[in-house]
Image (cartoon, rainbow, N blue to C red; front, top):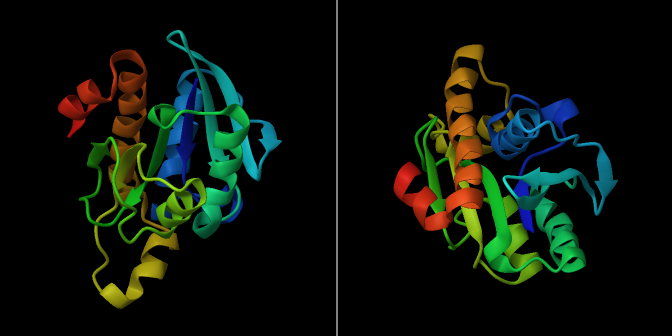
Length: 185
């Protein structure tokens, strides 16, 4: 069983923001595989299904970004998910828009959602897919940059990264993370 977590903020207010690339990826996978994201548990909205022979749980924590780990910990503990079957998808300002990077493990960098996840599950030894959102023009404007609305033109570029991230998740399920890293990094 794989636990696939997309990080973001509640969509009613934060849809189409740079910080919701993880949620957008979960939505993309759910749409492609006809998975209803209509269950609520552990401070999250989620759905489960079989994708290419693998049981998956697609999760969008509803705790707001900075407390994402609270929800992730509850899912990991309840379903007894081994760390090699956890994939977390999130936005990254250090990567150009529309580009993704996959890693088997690592640190949270300056991403508060990932800091929360690693703190709550007490490890960084899990797969992550980072979706590039580019950097703000002014460094002191980071918060507005990640939660502010984007133009349709920019959103289309960001969605290229979302599409690649969704494909990468399926590649990991089918062929393993090394294959996906070689293909997408």
